[in-house]
Image: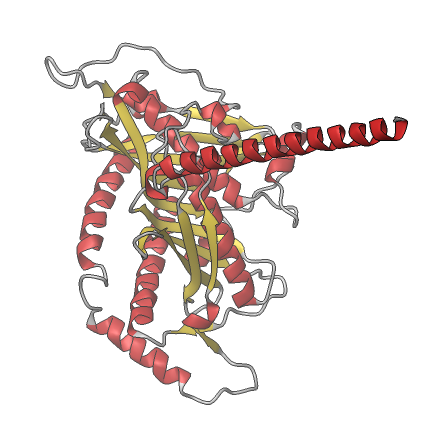
Length: 453
């Protein structure tokens, strides 16, 4: 009888265990069915990109610019642009913003910006310049601008490096509006570095910001700008000229009009020279397609801006880092120095969740072979449609390190499309020289502007 009781006990325990296992299986299947049904109820990926995320800047992983502002927010009365108009007339100094990055004392901040070759990460500076220009634009637009407008970066018009930046010295951002159209604002940003008891300019950039109506997404008028001093009037006139030049460049772009006769002869001579046998074993040129490098990135929500799109400064940073890699490979050196950023246009905004392909290649090397221009194209993959769309085109100019590096090899186009990119690169180089001349006339001279003479 004892043996029978033990057997019955074992059978009962086994049955209880079997029932519990069956219950867990049912629950797991129910959970899987529930999860699958919920997954089926989710919208397609293209719809998921429109999900709403927090627009609080502290929540969206932005730069140190928001933490280190030293100029106060202004609350003043300004004259009206017109009778009954809500627009104001403001002066350039009214939008002045200053931000100090204390690299000399803040070790944690310095660690965020220093590169492995003990220089400042210029890609991080590009992110900061974008955020900083947004602050300046807000200052001009007024204290309620974020409620009324969606201010976006239309592009980087010009950025010129004057001197290399020391990561162990403080850096000051100074910026103000220098030209304002109807809805466009040209923001001039100047980076200064402390040298002994003075602040020395190391970088000058002009960015174009546009105010959009939050409801319709169309351009909306902003406060007018009234320059006072001679320098402010010169910069305002230069902004007007640049606006006219931008429209003219669009019409004369090689994508819309063929190269002129001089440019055709330039291409002819370039290709004819490439057919000549080299004087030594070293190849004096490379084909443009052979310089190409690429990268593919997923746009995560941590890199969003306050409008729920991908932060333009982040795209600038990743594009710069890819262009620097491209220049390193072409020059066979880890020491190319960034000299200029030219004509960056944010054609289309980038949604959260997008898959972005970045392609970089050397498109132009001038006769002195001391500079290399790299073009980076960002394309958005539309996975479901099987297509891709250009979102931004970047242009970066690098200098050959004079301490030991060989001159840059020239690049030769193989295809007609590459020939057009070469011509566009040559035009950008000439415009960069013009901007460097304007800065020199204002007293901004440096080791890198000399290369653009």
